[in-house]
Image (cartoon, rainbow, N blue to C red; front, side, top):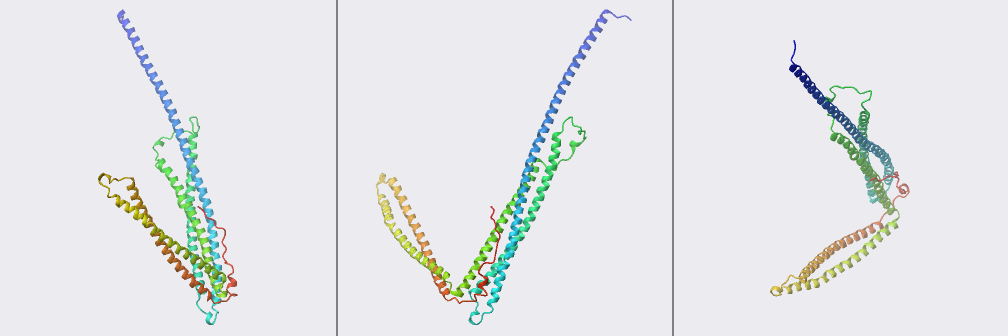
Length: 401
């Protein structure tokens, strides 16, 4: 079958057009593919770099919290160690209270051998009773404080366990994230894990993750270290107060003994010295009261002048009744004078009360001097020979802030 020249030409044209169309389409697809591949490569690189950056930031955050946790753990352990030292001091203090208690009981027993008029429930016996009551009170307080110390030590151990656990988890997480951070496309241990993106990771969110460690640190600081410091301060206060207070009671009893042995001149002189000082203060206060009265009286004429000036100036006619500077100053002057008088009168009232108290003190001192003069001597060898020194030794306690 033969074709015409037109058919031949048309066939060639069709082939040219089809080839051109196919090449154009192919070129477009190639260009689109190149663009897509370039975009995918760039996006993949950016995404992987972003993952690396976020892993790096996460590692920094984790390291930061780990450092805080480790610091807090070290501080907690150190503070708890100091508390254990304080506990030993407290146990020593409790043991020491038995020594003055034993001597006190021996004194009471020895004084039961008194006969005739000496066998009287006197101030010495009362002081001994107060002394033993005071010692037992502090024994109870220190035992109660010891219970608090033991409880706080257990609390600190619990805090340490929490911090330890948090640190261990941080270390595990850091090791995993460091491995992830170091992964690269040529690593030999990477492989497909289908469906891993669907796995549940609802253990926490960044906010709750940070809050967990923050709570652990703050709980250790507050319920642990802060409470421990306060407790050590309280323990040291109690130990020192116990020693001081028991020593005061001990010395009071000794003074009672000494008064009844030889009408102690030191006590007598101290009382007389206080009486003289009180009398001097009474004299000084009496003079002060007189000066206050005179001062109050001296304010009356200026007050009358200022008030009279104000009254007189109120009679200025019409526009001359001006609220001028003299008027304002006179008002301030009246207020100031009245306030000064009020203050002076209040001080006068305080001074009269103080004077009354001084007279009461003077009366008590007078009476106490008379009591000291009538004190009866009691057994010196059996009692006072044991009470020359306060038999209570405490270790060097420390105050912490």
